[in-house]
Amino acid sequence: MAGRDSNFGLRFRGQIEVGAEGEYRFWSTSDDGSQVWVNGQKVVDNDGDHGAVTRSGTIALKPGRHAFEVLFFQSGGGFELGVEWQPPGGTRGPIPSSAFSHEARPLVPLGQTNWVSRPDLADTGKVWFSRLNCASCHTVPGQTGVPSRPLIDLAENVMGGCLAEKVPTAAVRFDLSPEQRNALRLTLSQRVVEEPLTPAQQVSHTLSRLNCYACHQRDGVGGPGASGHADWFRVLGEADLGDEGRIPPLLTGVGAKLKPKWLSEVLLKGTKVRPYMATRMPQFGVPAADRLQPAFLATDRSANPLPEPALTERDAKLGWKLVGREGLSCIACHTFTTYGSMGIPALSLDSMYHRLEWDWFRRYLPDPAALRPGTRMPTFWPEGHAVNRDILQGDTGAQIQAIWAYLAGGPKAEVPAGLIRGRKELVVEKEPVIYRNFIAGGGSRAIGVGYPERANLAFDAENLRLALIWQGSFIDASRHSTDRGEGFEPPLGDHRVEFPTGPAWAALASAEAPWPTKVAQRFRGYRFDAARRPVFQYSVGSVTVTDALVPKAGELDVTLVRTFTLEGPAGTLWFRAAKGQIVRQADGSFRVDDKVQIRFRGGGEPRMVGDELRVPVTVPGQLVEELTW
Image 1 (cartoon, one colour):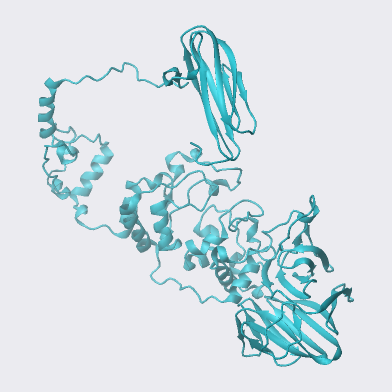
Image 2: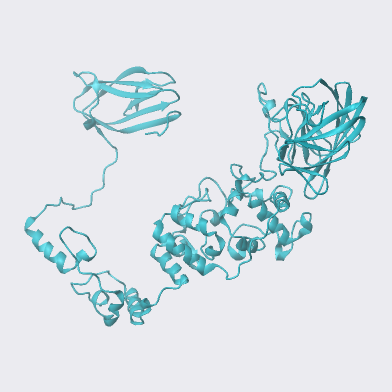
């Protein structure tokens, strides 16, 4: 009944009928807890988290029906439930099902009588069944109906048959109103039915036939307001979205708004994207979807829609900035996958590209109310002018294209900045913040650094390597502030880039030699520069390394400038900068896993050895590494 094996409860209630007055004993055997109640009195208390246990209790009852209830819960492991009784003078055993009844009583129409078959009327009924041609619609074994006449044939006599003022006995009586009857006569007399329906007529006809107008409005027709049912529509939870959150969406222009595949999915499966809306879309089956979807497309789509632009990674990254907290703050209302919005739960960003057409989207954003009257969606480009002038120089078209490029990533896109919020977030403001603890991806001796430039890093003091970098929010310290503070805390921001595990520096016999898993090295702590940025210090063998990192924020990306200063006996150390899919760019930089751009100044010629990027550095000497992501 529960459909699961653990963590559920069941309640059985109704009435139990007893035939004799006296003391009744009830038993319950359960794994885990159970109780038996009679007339609101707890008779058997077998509650608790336990294995199979049997307990009993007694109650005095008079003949008749009594309120009866059994409660049961299952925590984990196996589960079992059984209830028995012993009537006065009887033996212990199962309660017969005939003793139980439900508290509800069926409603019976006044004056209802049981139907009695009368064989003497069967032959008369058969005659009328044939005379009225019921078999033309209803299938009965041994009965064959006369095929219905083509509808256009009724144009010969629009005043007779089922359209007559007084319908003859042989015709079907539809109880048509005078308005309906006159409309049908006009349609037939003008022989409109001989002409094929246009796509627009097909849409209107299907919406009427399926009664879509009861919930949806299209071109000013229909909707809950017109049917007087507006108050019936509710929201789930406490989402304050007004009518937009409870009334089904407008169908005006829906063929131009939704992609064909998504439109078919909605019509066939009733797929939902508004979890806060209590009303659910019914499914009308393949025939209705096959007719309605192409009719919507043919009616609503422009003959020359603006084609979707070529989207670049740069567009997507700028779009990520625009939808986040530091851009247009779309996350104030819109959710993303499992991350709730900062306010009311509007449509999820991760499903929009899958659903919407580009030509509709680029017309909607500058003036949402023009395409969706009554929407709460604000415009960030009033009269075509961008509110945010910092990103893409306020170019309206470029900003909308960037948002579209970000949405194209669907649920795999980076989580918008601001949606991931820690319970005890360490906020970086005027100077860097250091967090020394277990950081996921940084090891048990991780040193996290958050910079005011919205760049962050985790330095692995065990292997003396830069473990990972990310943008946006720094870290949530709540895990390590609760109880014993066990476990690794992941970064709180976005655009994470991880670097190879193991030592970052090694002395190699040749450029192609296997990279060692261990080297003789020692962490010597860190000092602060004038801007309170940590400068890491460590030794690799007899070589002392100073590792200074300075972030530089740009319009699109963040660059981390890392300066290594090596001092010690003359020789060469190799630096392993990255591991993965490495592509050398025309400007001499290296693209790694299509996530981070690396360029070097100083040091020897970088080498790609297998999937590793290595750089030789002469000791004493200096290497500058620039990481842009």
